[in-house]
Amino acid sequence: MIKWWKITGALLILYTLVWGMLGPVPRLDILNETIRNVYYHVPIWFAMLFQMGISLWFAVKYLLDPTAKNDILSNQAAQVGLFFSIPGILTGCLWAKFTWGTWWTFQDPKLNGVAIAMLIYFAYFILRSSIPDEQKRARISAVYNIFAFVMMFVFIMILPRLTDSLHPGNGGNPAFGKYDLNNNMRMVFYPAVIGWILISVWILDIKKRLAILNYEAEHE
Amino acid sequence: MQSPIQQLIKKEFLLEFRQKSTLAGIAVYIVSTVFVSALCFKKIIHPVVWNALFWVIFLFIAVNVSAKSFMQEGKGRGLYNYIYYSPRQFILSKMAYNMVLMLVLSLLTFFFYSWFVGSMVQDMGLFLVCLLLSSTAFSAVLSLMSAIASKANNNISLMAILSFPVLMPLLLVSVRVSKNAMDGLAWSVSSNFLLILIMLNVVVVVLANILFTYLWKE
Image (cartoon, rainbow over all chains, first blue to last red; front, side):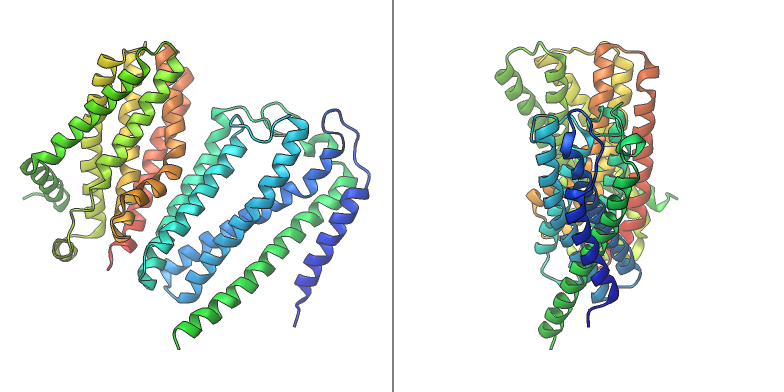
């Protein structure tokens, strides 16, 4: 049975894909039509952060209550989060090429932050794969998950003090929210955020069920 | 009567000095690394390059020093410690020992680096404070990472994979403060970053205290 929120998520994404391309946007220098990227790029990052938050939540939960389900959810949410970072980076690169003139730059704290976040989660999966014992793997990777998330959070907080950001809304650049995220854009942006988060939860739900089935099959 | 933490720290020092080869090994590692970079770079004119090279060397020495801190803990000794000490005492003593060791070694690195490559630091006081705070924070992070890596079959490359991304915030702040010290900027410019370094120290020590309990159980 498909639940209502799954349909809502799919419809919201469909709506933002179509209306994001067709709807009216403010005419701004340099940004031009690339401003539409705010409908795709930003919500995808929100979905990634949301999944990594879920991963952290179940890591904490696992340490307090060590059940296989908590570990599976923590692991799968980290996978979904890492998966969402790929379209997040691709849409960002495309946008950067047309506005900043480069695919990637080390001058921007958000770009560095996401690179570090991806490295942390790659390390998390490598750590998981190098411990054969199930319970030990779950416990140790939960510890790393929590520690790495806190350090990543600190990193994101302090980085803007270290380098000026090129991103809109930072380092003296005009924010989208200030005057160009007008009501027309809000009508697409907020549904996009909700839609992408719902879709990410749907993906997580499927992956979780598959992982639990695999787990049960192994422990017959 | 010594407190358990004092006993554990004393044990670490005793073990280290009984087995002088490891300590001497690290000293030689430092000298040869600095020497190699001195030979490769010949002369460093640009302060940014000086700074970056110093911190890269610092990072690798820190990882090498701390990597072994949990590797020597065998199964039997682990069981013994488990009976007599609490996990909090254990990780605190490890971190304290690693902090002292790393502090000494970072000073040694700085000494050789200034000797071979040349010193460009204008505000020595600020640089040393920065070195102190980053040594403690680095060794606190790496103690916990070493504990994690030791549970995963003592893989040395795993240690680097796990710790590099986590160390990045620390490293960037340290690089910034030491650059300020090199340029001889006023302390008020760096005070914010020094506060961040102190805060990172506190955060890491507190987190390691909470999390190590779960790592320790076999």
